Length: 291
Image (tube, one colour):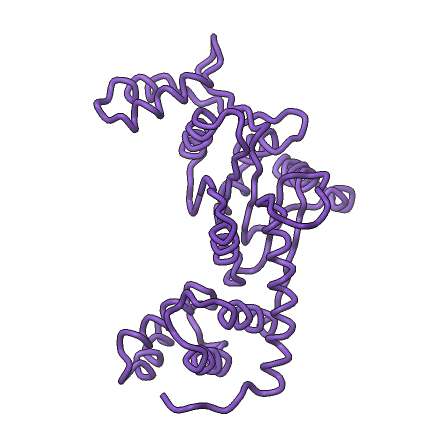
């Protein structure tokens, strides 16, 4: 690939703004992971909201890896049952050590009243309890009866946190630090007095927001491109050099409104096309626009 012209003044301006957003995001992620140089915050849980594709997931992964922080990962459309199992095993294995729980893109659990109520209790600094009332007895018995040691471990963990005389489980979260990266914003406590009908979901959302360090990134198209460009230019995890990154970002900027997805995941796909098809990736990118 031949050398290309520098970024335009507007593009560089947007990247500079993106650098500031990236730094702000890294600061919040570092705070959530417990590796910040800032003063200790009064709240240990962090909720980061932005429009899709701003690099939240990528930044958490990189920051955790750079600092050798192990996280309990809960991604995508996770059921509360699956979350209960992960938290029970994590607590059972490390009852007294700090556990970082990363809830990423699980927007559905922050839309359901029951799930919100459970997460509210888990993030409460005084209660510190993940209470899941579903009958777990049948599952526990199957896990314990399995010949798979991993399933036995799950059974033992769930048994340890099954409250005597009940069918559900209660997992203490006193040593857990939650970091939530989400495309779902939460109702602010101040908004409850401004609406005609306050629902339970809104009350739960406001309660969670009151329990966390809440950071909101509302971005327009220019800010979104600048933020992604900042992340791309500062990482070596894509397998392409700076000239290739520049070419890719310039192409994305020109076609932003047509792109089927504007995220680091999309950048990875485009970079992979560039690596795997060095002779005809431009035409493949054009086809990618029609997805």
